[in-house]
Amino acid sequence: MTVVDVYASADVIARSIAAGEVSAVEVAQAHLDRIEAVDDRVHAFLHVDRDGALEQARAVDHAVASGQPLSPLAGVPLAMKDVLTQTGVPTTCGSKILEGWLPPYNSTVVERLLAAGVVLLGRTNMDEFAMGSSTENSAYGPTSNPWNLDRIPGGSSGGSAAAVAAFEASLAIGTDTGGSIRQPAAVTGIVGAKPTYGSVSRYGLVAFSSSLDQAGPFARTVLDTALLHSVIAGHDPLDSTSISADLPDVVSAARAADVAGMRIGVVRELSGEGYQPGVQARFAEAVAILESAGAEVVEVSCPSFAYALGAYYLIAPSECSSNLARFDAMRYGLRVGDDGSASAEDVMRLTRAAGFGPEVKRRIILGTYALSSGYYDAYYGQAQKVRTLITQDFQAAFASVDVLVSPTTPTEPFRLGERTDDPVAMYQADLCTLPSSLYGGPAISVPAGLGDEGLPVGFQVMAPVLRDDLAYRVAAAVEAALVSRWGGPLIAQAGALT
Ligand code: GLN
Image (cartoon, rainbow, N blue to C red; front, side, top):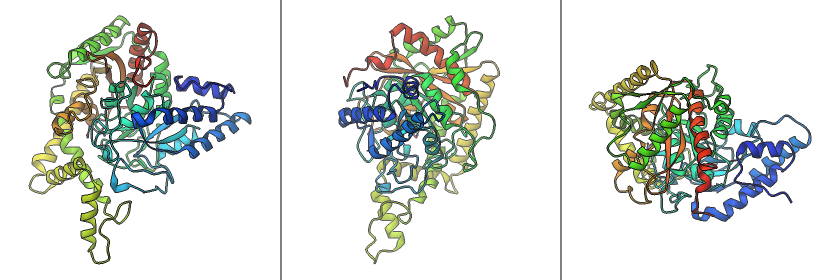
């Protein structure tokens, strides 16, 4: 019997399957066994689709046997955030209000993955409706960080990041509204990318904040991340905000890993007070790597970034208060109090009271207030102006540098429970990721090493709209230098589950 290496990269796994050295079914089974062995400790998955995964794997094996052309990720197992619909597979968004709901259609991301022969292992835990930074807002209990089970895996896509970091899946999909791919990637020691807004379809992505939501890839290497990115990105007529322009070749950029002659801007506002010393030290080392690889590094000021948090926490809740109105007890999932005598309004009120958790309610209330006629200009209108100023900061910076860099998060992963009673402290986890979400440009987090507490720290690269290739090129250069220094990927040093 062939031994399947769940520690191998997606690229290597796909090549072995294509060469007939191992079957896709054996690869899927090895990952299902790994989930069985560790997921009671990690709790990355809300639902494992064993039968569906094995059936998809058999189809790949059939394609190999009959000599059909294969995509570069055919047969590679993937963990899907529980917010993108998959026909007949439970989709809860981490919420009680969607418990038991089976979507009648596939999201475009799922369609593209299935068409590429990627094997969907199951659905991953998340903060309810993607609102949070620690995966503690899930109605189904928290996920743990595979590096230290008492720490948060980041959020809101913490289940997806933890599945990849715990070697339960080679690849995962997350969504990033204000940082929910990059921040969990950083604190679990893996790679995560937020593509240019509009380059990955939102069709079938349950909406939180439509002008910010963007699905994207997680993997353990920059190349695997780029391979997954190129499978899911592309124009989709089913999404009216989908971009029809040609997209850059991120796979070639990840392979090139060459920064000679590039101009790299260090954002002055994303450092200093509140940033752990270990985070700043790893950041400085990564910048030094880029300099010695021939990049020119300059400091850049983006003064409006200081207001990103305030603007985001008006815009995102405003859009959420409108988007979540669809959960009305009539169309999806939970229905409470429908005893024949209650009015439709009572059933809606009881269902929403029972079905939504405290953070979702907080955001709906905040957003409804900010959009109300007396306050619209003072809050929502003002936040949109700040969003424009942040975009102008990016545009001014990109007139003189190719990319901007910063730490991905101000701190290492904090303890489970440490910030659950302090929403503002929780929001601070996204200080570095919010600006590029508001701008809509691509950004990637790549492991930079371990901080003072021995836990992962990420390095963020932000690029101009539709220049995802530049972010990959810089991330790959940092990765190449650090992997040769460490003698292997950072994630190989994670010890909690071995
Ligand atoms: N942590 C941020 C929030 O709670 C971002 C979440 C996200 O990107 N989905 O809104």
